[in-house]
Image (tube, rainbow, N blue to C red; front, side, top):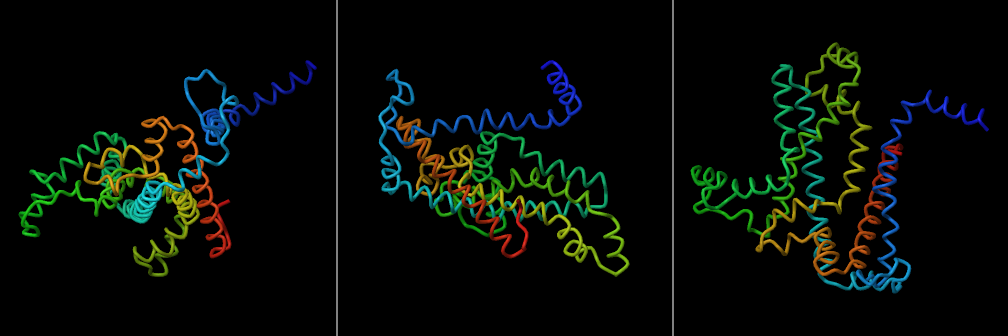
Length: 308
């Protein structure tokens, strides 16, 4: 036994670097997978404060799911979530990729570093600060956007951008572009550093210009990274962002500003209906997983190669 234990310890020490790299897996198991047993309350009439264990609660089967799917507010929140999610995917994903390509094309190193730094700084600003900044910028009272539009003669009177339900989805999408595109571009820029310079030299010999090299060398070379991030982005379609939407919406934009995450918050915390909140979480996770597999199979069908 001692010989086996000693051999195991030697093997563990020899592979210590791999052990350190596997530590994030433990983090996922403890904080992401272990809490999933709490989903059991979605099938119960869970009552807090009754001094009952989880398995002593009253089991109700699928009643919580039926109650949710027959609630008109659920479908309104689902439409809002999908609308914001699609706009985020279209604008944020495309702008992030475009920004990375443009930064990669900058030849002045100092200017390149300055642009990259300025572009990803908003990522480190909390949504509490970012939301207040947006309210100030788009304010109908001396907001810089309204002042510029008035000076240019585009509008005759100020527009309450943050109080218009019809454009609230666009406000959420463009605020996401401003806040996360610079930080997301880092992944693409990292992939671009791995491109063999010989490919660009060959393109120069063939007389390719900078635009042609982007479409013939840069984009095809980082396409595996582009596909993986696209699938992961689609998988987060229903995860619009609780803090962002909750802080940006106003009393006038409640109709278009209630997402599934806010709907879950209201059920689980405001009204103490924890079972329905858990049922909504299961629905959200199931749809996200289905979207990942659908997008993967779609890529595999058209490109003969998926992402996993």
